[in-house]
Length: 321
Image (cartoon, rainbow, N blue to C red):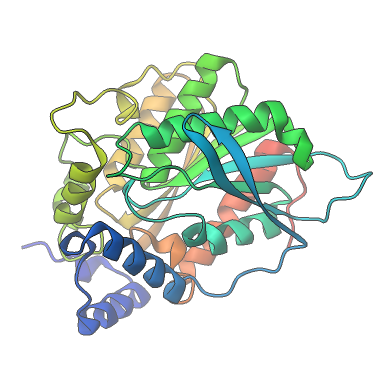
């Protein structure tokens, strides 16, 4: 019988042992509000220190259903003579049900500090109050706003990227496809272990959907909450089924011991088959959501640096130490 613990590296194994000893109930056994609080507390306990940045600004973006909260992190203070900064729109993970700006704060700050690229994170609408594709509509609306009005915040609409992790990776991938169709040029789509399909059980799903943090039961709970019952699934929820010709180049970061590992590799291959450059980085022995576990998992900091370097290269900034 396959045992995920045997494939974790030492730090991941120790973290999982501590979590199991604490006997926290899984998110799918909680109410939605309890799950949101629990996930936020978990990330807060594991994210590690937050980089100091000279500019952090909360603001509102007009969206398809009203004003949306967003947060900007920038590598330098804004002055009257500051050049416009390239920017990545970041979509947080959480199964379309949990998570928010705060649960991506540490990672976004780290990437900004090392890349010279500004990052804007969006508080998109969550399910079950707002079923999919409400979140995607919000994300694409935010990208359109950045392209047309980002200059009001000192950001350039001509040097854009999108990024996200897990469900946020789904949103980023689908937003990139919508940007292509709308004629909005993107330099990069940066995807950490993206959820790009929901109808096929891959080998990594079979191996790592039990005994880890992202279990089959939790993924099922996310899907039940996120989608309208019996509504057909289209390419927006499963971007792996889309036509990928002409979409932005991709950088994909994966955790080896993750139920979503195979579909991340499959998505990269689908992009390559369409002539789209797709770089894949794999961190051995780590699990889903590791980028938010810098306090315990050293590979999290490595992943932040790798993403920062990919952004610097794609958007033409000088990487920072």
